[in-house]
Image (cartoon, rainbow, N blue to C red; front, side, top):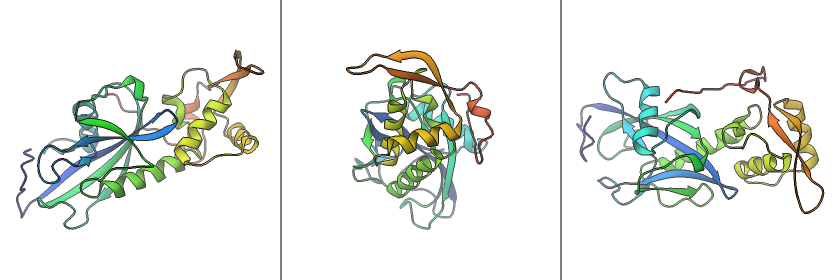
Length: 228
């Protein structure tokens, strides 16, 4: 489908936008692309595509990851919300179905016109993408309550302090160490190993996610892992 600057005034178009989150240096980042065509030429925006006539929404979201972000492989990807406000796109009537993904930033490569930006310090954004990112961030925070969403970005073995830092980065706040560990224990998603991480003081025990964590019957638990 053409993405020319002026869409047909009497037609309705559907796009898929994807909020791609990652953690870099304990800062929550979102991948943005600098627009090279009107409207909002030269302004940062979420990676997106127009949905083709015989393409499902999930397939379109995967195409965004491949074509716009250069992401291949398995990852956490979930449909977020549908945005259909009038005049949200100056080119015409455009309805957007937003997704969000959580990835390991070290394992992906993207084009020169794309860059990571801190969720806590966003630049000027095209369309209503600021609103979409804020909602996606809130959904990501909610996921921490009942999923092992950090599974795809942590190494196989990690300390509870490292896991806590991931949670704090996503939540944007400090957590009480004792309460955090009680919460993680109650979720039953990690288990201790016999390995330790050397440190300046006492070595820290290493943990790993349980093998059945993706199918564990945690209330509200939902994983959507798509083959790319």
